[in-house]
Length: 318
Image (tube, rainbow, N blue to C red; front, side):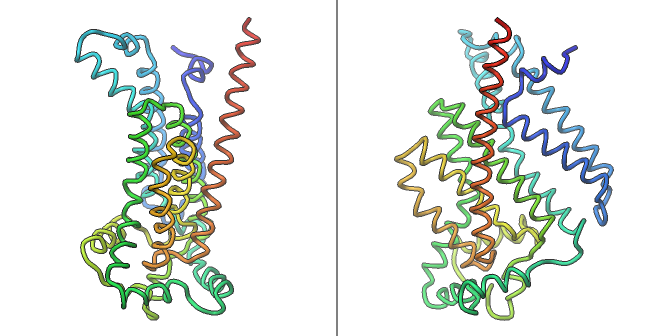
């Protein structure tokens, strides 16, 4: 039976951040659960997922799996690679589920929304105009612009996957884990702000002014289908699209400079598309960049502390 020190030696910064978020949100639900259906089951699910993650990590880091490395048998090589892949990337596969869970918790503190605050802030920035309405009017003139913006918006849903697979295939495992830690922290900040400052976004509050009157083709239909099926009214501030895309872009800038040159205009267009499509206010975009920056900042500090702590333990062990 492992003691806590043995467990701690198996964990990495992204593991600790992921488990801390699940435990913290579970504790939050014990005290704030108004309107959340079957909240005790949700808390229990948190405990179950944390237990399964710890068991998976213990198994994946165990001697049995490590013994597969370097084996001459093809089945052993494939098994080791698959286990290593999911050990390295598992948080990335679960972020979407955490987002969907956050949509259930939007009104546990506030019954209403703060859209009126963000609308006023947008108007202060743009001399009384609504940016989402102004940008949306361009779609009446240029069909291709709506298609391009819709493509960039929908690109978000494969952005982390593409960059993550690129880093993994190129065997940049520590860089991939560092990016996933920073993406996770950016997500956790966004999820917390969803609850503290729920907002529906222009496509609901400014629909009467034409914030969601766009028409397009294939990519527009894809973007609308994703938003209508996966989005939650109330998760507008800050824009998690922007926060995560910002973190990924900064990671690519650091680790894959050639890919960065390709991605930069697409990600900037993604930022604009969130307002163009009426999904977010401009202040949501600015807050999303801020959340992404905080994810990077705290992620780097956690990484430095983790390395320093590991070195100190090795020195004391001598």
